[in-house]
Length: 323
Image 1 (cartoon, rainbow, N blue to C red):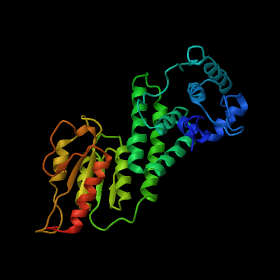
Image 2 (image 1 turned 180 degrees about the vertical axis):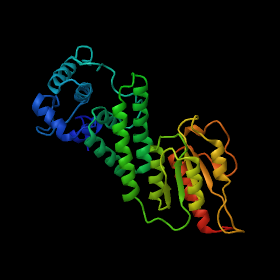
Image 3 (image 1 turned 90 degrees about the horizontal axis):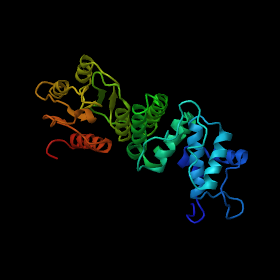
Image 4 (image 1 turned 30 degrees about the horizontal axis):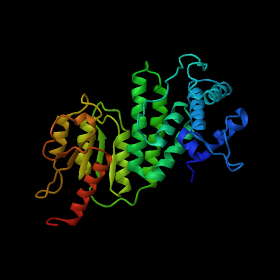
């Protein structure tokens, strides 16, 4: 555990920066950007000025500045006590302010963002695995993954389509982590009708639905995930063939929200004559906002609520009528 009076450890600093501890030690050996003081004689402890220096080092290298030049600029910043952004060399389009607009977020979120901006795939993968193990799926998604994805999206929208490569790399690694969590973090699926998960036609954003898939699998619920932009005819066939207890339809924007399709799914009946049933339809995603859900539909506010709704639905079915 770090002592606030002596600074933080190298491991804590590395997590904050989104680099490996080996990288921090290597920068110290090669460029002399180690902690200004070592209270116990040999263990590195990083104070506020040291942390600011390493943050500047990461910012400059992410902008394309060679590490040696970035280290000299970061050292000057610590010596002067101010950021060295104005006089640091920045090639091409790289400029000050290339960090992501994260706001008040967890420390791991900033580290993940820095690793993604550097296109450091191994670091991104390692950090995602660490936050999943430390916080669990729901908190990792809501407090780390989703805020970082939103920040990347806001950045490229406001910077002439820069950072598109960052969004692609980050999305791919988050998808990989979520699918791995779906397999390794799940219990044996229970028997009974499944949950069908699908993006509405023309909707390509699958990551929130992948997070829900992983969360339901973690609860041991049977799932059928159909992915992006499922045609209406295919969704209809999937519902009729699988007879689901619930159907989650994801829409990221109002332009893709298909209310007629949602009503059709909610009215689809299946089962034996005399005991036919219809699925609960979950209108998932911001695209559904602005209308009151019709009968047979719910609109969860987030991942945690969506998992809770489906879990209670299965618990009620297991308890039987009159429970």
